[in-house]
Length: 418
Image: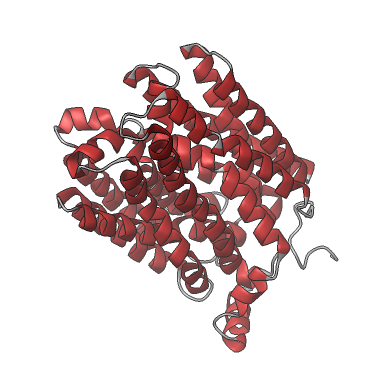
């Protein structure tokens, strides 16, 4: 049955967003798998952090090439190829007993994942009106956070299947299902999109790196990328790798309770993402909600670190930490509105390099601090508290970056004079 014209934009964008969901399962899977991977490969905290960070290293290297390709070639075809790459990387990771090969597999999954966010942002710029872009980005982030939530449930999947390796194979199987949905649901352009040929001709006539040069000259791209990079450490550090162990050691929570508490970071993001997007779209402001998100995030993490909290209070605090971290989604429409439409993917890719670079830098830094403070593999509460200080520092910096952002009033570049 044909999809009505009214719902087609949502179908296209959310079908592509399933890749984002899949990649958030992959990105956050090392949090519940942390101890099992250390045992399986006989490595320490810094080494498992580096294994996880291979995903982000690949992102940093390939995001800009991915953006340049997306501005020139079929979004749907590139999505399909990237997802196949991720599926194969997962299958190889599940089968290897070599730590070096495992790092290569993690790198391959990260390489494929570079297309998930950029392609979705590009499709939003083509299919969704500017005054709905923030809300639509919030819906896409809901899919991503569902992936992060599902990743925290991997221990249940391991118990059911009997091995963490089988769990990774099952995740790859889910990727195959999403590949089918993307093949059916994604379309590069609306039927009446008149800018397609003009934009491609503009780019082809000005050289392959023209879009990249324009993006790198735009202050909004840098400020937006750095803001999201630092706010997103809630996901990169707490959700993706170290949150569960921090809660067990520093907050004296059981493994089950720790996993449940971390899940509420993603629940908070699921609730907060569409609300921040809707608030921003309706008010016509991007800057003020970003500043508020940074300030309130800083308050939340200081409460978590320095006040004695019960299990229920920790759930509330981690939910609010995720909720206010949702302000990060506003940088994507902010950048769309600040650059020519022909270089949207290139601009988002520069920003995304900064975002994923945060994971590449701060996950190993967290592990390094743990090893340095503990002088061994038995990490105590003091070591975790020292390492967690990364978060208030970066949240403060994110707030300062937001103060220097230029307000777009939810109007795309080139439309301000009309």
